[in-house]
Every structure is written in C-alpha cells, then in structure tokens.
Image 1 (cartoon, rainbow, N blue to C red):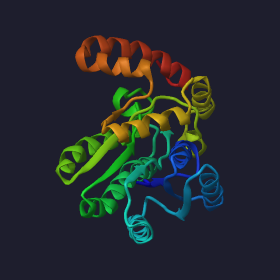
Image 2 (cartoon, rainbow, N blue to C red; image 1 turned 120 degrees about the vertical axis):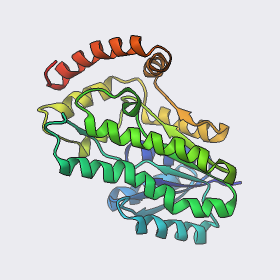
Image 3 (cartoon, rainbow, N blue to C red; image 1 turned 180 degrees about the horizontal axis):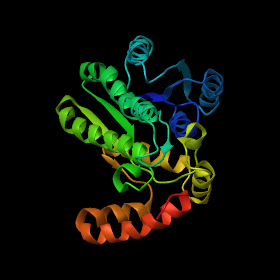
Length: 271
C-alpha cells in the first residue's frame, strides 16, 4: 500500500530529507511550510524522486491550518498514515538574558506546534484505526546543556508529550515515535534567536563537524516507523551519555558539569 505522509516544516532541512526519503519509496508526501517558494521546489523534488508531491502553506501556530490540511488530505488521499511534526526553531541564552517574548515564540512553535499537529490528526487516525506520529524533539531535551534554556525546555516538552501520547493512543492503533538527534548538518540556525555574540557561527561549526546528515536521521525515522520504535536516537555518543544519565546519575552529573564548563566557554558564557 502506498504510504500517505504529511510533514510540517517540510520545505528545508530535516523535513525535506524525510520527504525525499519517503518519495523514493513511492509515497504520497504532503509538505506544509511557511515558505511557498521553497515548498513548491521541494514538491517538484518529491515528484522527481518517484513520489507524489503536494505542497500546502502551513503555519503550525494556527490550529486551523492543520485541521484544514487534515480534511484536505483525507478528501484527496482517503486518509493519512504518517504525520511528522518537524517544524521548529532554535534559541540560545541564559535565564537572565532570554526575553519572555523569545520564550513565548519558541514554545508556541516547538511545543504547541507539535500539540496542534497531534490534535488535528488524532481524530482521523482514530477513524482509520491506525496512524503514526513522528515528533521531532532533540537530544537537547534529554541532556539539557546550559545557555540553551528555552530550547531545552521546548524539546523536553515534545518528549513529554510524545511519551504521554504513546500510552494514551496505543489502544487506538496509533503509534508515536520521538526523535532526539544531537548536532547534524541542517539549517536550524537560520531562524535562531540569541543575544550571545557569535552563537550561530559556533553552532554551525558543530553541525558541520558532525558525520551525521539529515538523510541519515531521516533513514532512522523511517525504520523506526516501520518497526514501531518509540525512541529515535541517531547519535551514538549522546545515546551512551543518556544511558549513563539514566543508570548512573551521579556520574552523569559530574561528566555533564565538566562538559558544561567547556560548552559555556565555547558559547561565550561564563564558566
């Protein structure tokens, strides 16, 4: 059966990579994004890759956008199999320096954007008796490095929502996967908000050094959906650190403190 996939923030970065990976399997892929020029281009890329592409303008800050897309895809395709709540933004800064406006901005997109995606498509998934949510969180929501306060909290919120819905929706045939990558090559800093001088350049350097690509993360996501896995943790080093945190919290606290001092110096904060 041809898969029917909807991806928020699908016109660039990880969203585009997921769209193109699904396209190669012959899937019908709808990408929702606030950038129509990029969206139309990726729609064509999906078609060229062997899928059926469909771009719709979508702002995850509006529940009505997502509800309309759900109704549209149900009418057009007869339903949806996979919803990837990918749209997100980044921020960096201390508790003193991050403005409340920036806190509200990132929570509205990173947390409530995922909430809206799940809320809009859950009724259709229940009617179908099947469906999969893929919620893009971050290792930042598990490891919680300093000077990333609002971003960490937003991604921890996505993890909490995903764990909750995994239990809440399971008996309805709905699967949830939670994706927690560390740094990989993407365009996340293009919309980043921060008062820390040079933070975008420093984060971009870390991304470029990564051997993990957006395509690699997309492959892991597709495998997780096929196998019914909840956790998608693409980075081996950070995955090991998370295991230390779970099973040896005191050792993790010491390691994290040492790492945090280096991180704060690198990011321009005070160690």
